[in-house]
Image 1 (cartoon, rainbow, N blue to C red):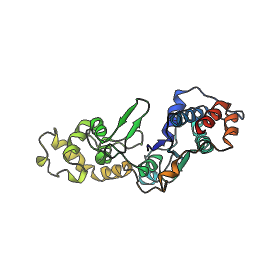
Image 2 (image 1 turned 90 degrees about the horizontal axis):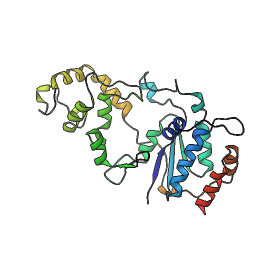
Image 3 (image 1 turned 180 degrees about the vertical axis):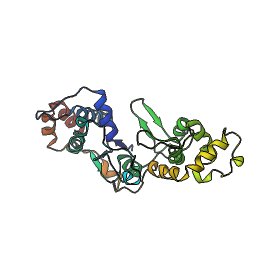
Image 4 (image 1 turned 120 degrees about the vertical axis):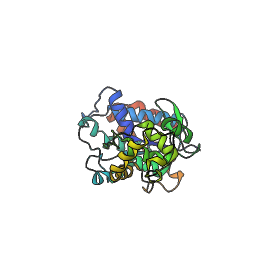
Amino acid sequence: MDVYLIDGTYELFRHFYALPAAVDVNGRQIGAVRGVLNSVLSMIERGANHIGVATDHVVESFRNDLYPGYKTSEGVPQELLSQFPVIEESLEAMGVVVWPMVYYEADDALASGQCVVGTRVVQLDRMRNIVRDEAGVVAKFGVPPRSIPDYLAVVGDSADGFPGVSGWGTKAAALALSQYPHLEDIPKDWREWHPSIRNARSLSTSLLNAWNDALLFRTLATLRLDVPVFDTVENLRWKGPRPDFEKHCHRMKSPDLFARATSASA
């Protein structure tokens, strides 16, 4: 059995910028919504029968209370923001389980479903058709999944709005955290650092000077695993569209979506 957990927010952003704008019969923007529905339906047609989609019902989360610079909805086009409730309604009508996040983020819901573990729980990059297991994470970042929050704490994450630690780039972070999995494991005395790590003295000084910030950034980068999403995998089984999905499709001027969903559930 394959279970697919999808970041609906990422999918909505991706389709918004990849597809031309479109409106429904009421003049609402739905170009990105149609793109996501087509994408999820294609997965179902290819055999995916256990699916859950997490969305950021609002962009802000509990992390904004921890750090004022954390990402907000500022700068996000209204034409995109207005499609968030529409995609949630449409996916639910299509029979897909949706988790609209308010206090938490979509990533937290996905992590609660499962983070990358060995070869059993993997990340599927559908754009590049890459399946990334634990070894794939190491190949990409130079550190295993357990060290990713520490990695982001020092490197920073521009998408989420925190800068990391001055002087720490991806190479330095990978070298240090491949030897010392977590920030607390890094020796306070740079002379005790592994000889493979260059510029140990300056990196150590920078990290110690920004220690509290680094710990805060790690908290921001750490996905929560306690979000209530589903009790059993059976909750995610796709059983076909609801009767009202036909109305959603006609409103979006996409009767073909209803026909495909009905055919897939037959």
